[in-house]
Image (cartoon, rainbow, N blue to C red; front, side, top):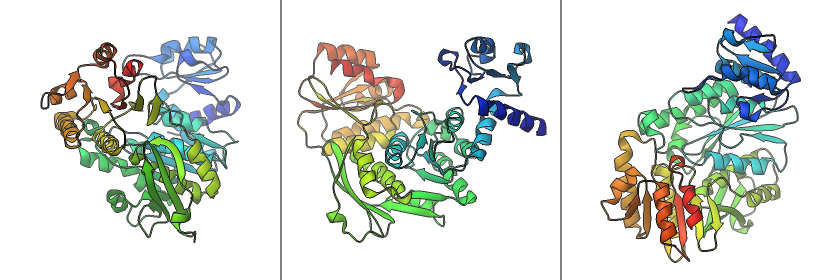
Length: 440
């Protein structure tokens, strides 16, 4: 153990002089440290020499046969070394680290919080969705001496993963957006999801840190009972209060801190560029955390109003023919139901939904897809196009139009052009529903 620790300290000395890390030979940065990770279908030890010849200053490997000179740094396990180096770097930092996890909305919440905190601080936030056992270390290693705060997104698809990521990132503050039916297969059901996501609360509590908790969510209130927390929500008695104004299609809201004597009704309406009333709590969370870190009310408003979603997440897209609500990056029963409920309430004519399968639900898959189809019927949404084998099976219950893949759906939409419609496009990333946008 001591030998491994000394190796990490030696590696960190090199990192201080060359503070860039890469794991892919297709994205080499000059003087970076190359970590030769392994996967089910690849062994990057084989590409270590190529990485060095392409400009890397050091290659971390775990197979002795590939060590040719002092530029190759041999460790027992490359992934473990990457995680240990990230944790060692974290221990040298003296800035607040905020971690965000949850079944839905964690990336949107992270981006909103970054937009708010960046109004006052130099912030490092997780890029994209680099939120797993490799992404979190890479995020930490990108924190420099110039950063004043860090926001680390944490994802998980099995129990113990959040606990492990907390051990690497050592967050001081934490927030769970919500706990819903996501990755049921890996977690072993909904109870497993609850146990896994609450690992963040337990870590922060044990460390003596602080939580930001949505008081409108009874489960999160229950899981955080007795812990040091700042609450936000739409009911009286919270530390930071907000009121939903409308979402048609963009979310508008008002907010105020509990120690602000000005009535909530007198507060300005903040007009965001996010769709879906389900995003109200994500927006309010960012405002609450910004307020805690003394970002001014005007700065918070500016950050929230200036944030434009991208990457197929809660996007509004106006095409030549239609208005699209594009949310095709991820989907599970919780987020799908919320999106449909919000869409049903929107004051728009000629509405249509294009929905893709919700993946990783295991034995619950058939039941949950049937439930979505039933919800469409209950909300009077008749113009529906369903994509994927699970939805194809569920569609037989109602006679809704369905296709086995996004390519099939694209062919149909090209041959049967839709015009002057407001269209919700939502599905799991693996279904690739963004393909159909070309025909809309």
